Image (tube, rainbow, N blue to C red; front, top):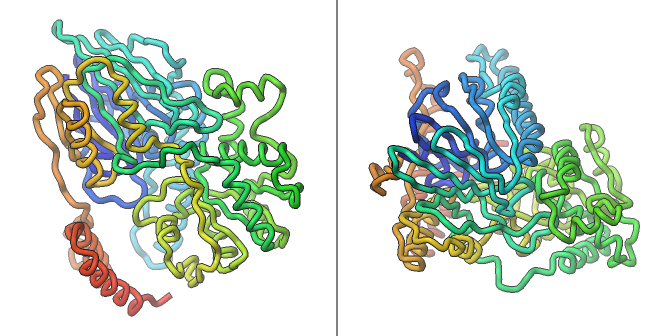
Amino acid sequence: MKLTFIGAAHEVTGSCHLLEVNGKHILIDCGMEQGPDLYENQEIPVAVGEIDYVLLTHAHIDHSGLIPLLAKRGFQGQIVTTFATADLCQIMLRDSAHIQEFEAEWRNRKARRSGAELYEPLYTMEDAVNALQYFVPCDYDQKIELCEGVWVRFTDVGHLLGSASIEIWMCEDNVEKKIVFSGDVGNINQPIIKDPKTVREADYVVIESTYGNRLHGDEIPDYVGEFTRILRETFAKGGNVVIPSFAVGRTQELLYFIREIKEKKLLSDFLDFEVYVDSPLAIEATNVFQKNTKGCFDEDALKLVQQGINPLVFPGLKLSTTSDDSRLINYDSKPKVIISASGMCEAGRIRHHLKHNLWRKECTILFVGYQAVGTLGRKLIEGVPSVKLFGETIEVCAKIETLKGISGHADMKGLLSWLGGFETKLSHVFVVHGEDTVTDEFAKTIEEQFGCQAFAPYSGGCVDLVTNEVLTAGARVPKKAKEKPMAARAATAFQRVVSAGKHLMEVIFKNEGLSNKDLAKFESQIQNLAEKWDRD
């Protein structure tokens, strides 16, 4: 019995772990890295064709996004997950493939003009569709014999429709062990879906740490009241409320709140305000939510369904599917709500809406989820005075707001509470899926609070689950520009600049912990350099 950590090791995205037992190779998640990528990930140490199973905690792309690549490279095993996760992957993996193909087409138009080498997409729509045939969905709380000596069970962990922690029982050479993968642990008191359910027994736990050093606050947030205030203040000024939102999960929560605001007439001066959902993926995901009410919705949402009320639909809701639909939204001067992806403002239609609304002081940009370091969303929250969008400098005059507490992730207290649900003494806890230093901080917190061994592996870290021996902690290899073949060794000046930029990023992370005064000086030097050479 051996566990190897591949992705989301000292990083927030790209979850992937390899479990080897009874001659079988089992991947837990196979996610794509998104946003900042600090460290090199080790390759999966077995041929893709030798992977027997993928156990998928939930549908978010940073947990599922490389499954089509597995299929492209020869995977023919089973992908076991919950019914709702399988339904969401039907649309999300196709959408991811579309993005890969679109990016390749865009790059290759430029490459053909310049005579450069053509770019191959990571995977295609055909690869995604091929991967979907390997999904084997199951119910929550159903104990399944995966193969000889291995049983699994998916338990609702309250992060996303269909999300689960995964319990795995193993028996090899008369040695029995149990390991639990937390997946992404959900926040409590979220609308629509249930609160996280704890697990009672385990020898080992692999736990995420997205909010491993932060708290959402002790008070239960008044989501509807705060949301109503933001809408009222913005509409009174004649502005739009623009919400960068994750298409799956967060968008549906917002629709749930808005339906309540309209039903209770909480905005008496603006009863007929319109809400645009400008994301084809979000629209499809909403349909999946409506399909999976039984077993996934919490008591309040299910009660509405039983009364014949659709909790995600209301008067004034408008769905924008085409690019033309999207463009027309900003030609309408009437105050409105615009919900669009991506949630961190890194891509997608939201960037067009920011271009049209960020400079307007009567508008509000409302953030409703986690914003990773380095993303445009994080920069806006931190107060950047201007941004570049489509080659144009846009002054940030709109009000930047955050709906406090509306996070799909448990905070540090919630993670420790979930971990405290184990009634057996844990042999070891492995901390993954968190920002670089946070993983180590959270591992130390776990050791202090629970008195068990805990550590945060780097990619390639490996553990013998029979002896509880850490075979290797993994390699801390900073992400660098890939070496080019000999034929292209005479690197262009531009490529050398890119390499220098990546070196600068390494230096930045090495200087974490400097005094505020030194960091401010460092930042000023970087900003001056950027402004000097910014030619757009």
